Length: 120
Image 1 (cartoon, rainbow, N blue to C red):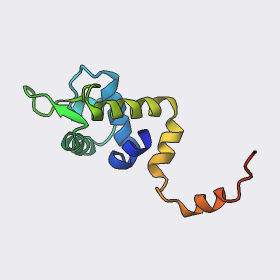
Image 2 (cartoon, rainbow, N blue to C red):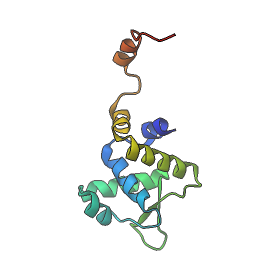
Image 3 (tube, one colour):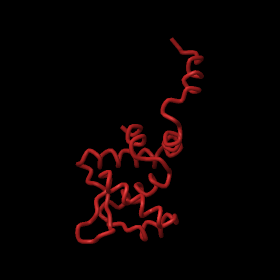
Image 4 (tube, rainbow, N blue to C red):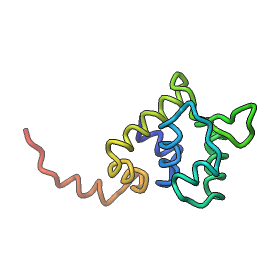
């Protein structure tokens, strides 16, 4: 599920860092400014990420506070996928980053794998 989620929704490390921070305190509402203060990124980029995540249903905007977002609930299918992906990032960050940047159908890797000696 993590690989499929990354392929469908994540194209950069900053995206996964924003989700990880938001999911670290799921009850908290996050603004672009608040996220930017913690991760020290370009606030305009953070705003775009939040809008994209909300459009994809990965986070929800607080109804009473425009521009303030929270992680999806874990009960929703996307919420569960977000949390599983964030957990993978926190425990296996190099593997997750490699998955983000490695092309899906890496022909060179498939060619190299053809020469692996398999144990019987």
